[in-house]
Length: 217
Ligand SMILES: [Mg+2]
Image (cartoon, rainbow, N blue to C red; front, top):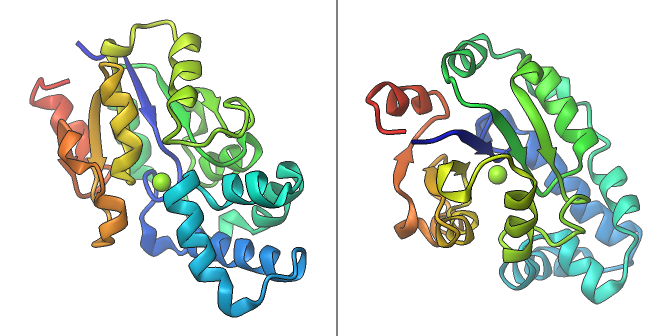
């Protein structure tokens, strides 16, 4: 019986096609070029390397280049979220139908997460926002991040469902006993790594209610 649902934020509560993550990703690359002097032609390769070794660009830059993580977050999240995300009444209605309390578990900052939820018109449905500061910059899929989140929840790990578009982020959740749902939003092979551990696979976030209605949660 699922008593709590943990939602990833980016590319999970809104589709990749919204373009928001693309804009933020461009800001990350811009930060590396303008603030750190990394040659533009090296940025993509380095970010792919950070993604695989550290989980995020932020974590890689933090460990290897000793950047100020707050400065990085302020820079990359300096986008007009509402220009990319219109209110989503269908999502709002779906969340209202799910009886479980809901939280956000994101590698972004809480301030940005609030802006995303506000733009989508779904802020009232979420209790806690477990952000990158809460997990002390140990981004998903670092196991310590999950331990911190589980310790803060009023339910046991095996009473939790976690939903994320990056399947590898579900692996530590599964190991802790959570139910896992992979949102297969794109054909990107990197995002499918670890998908064998998903209890459910959905194509859009709206399908969560269908799984719930079937009595599977
Ligand atoms: Mg995501």
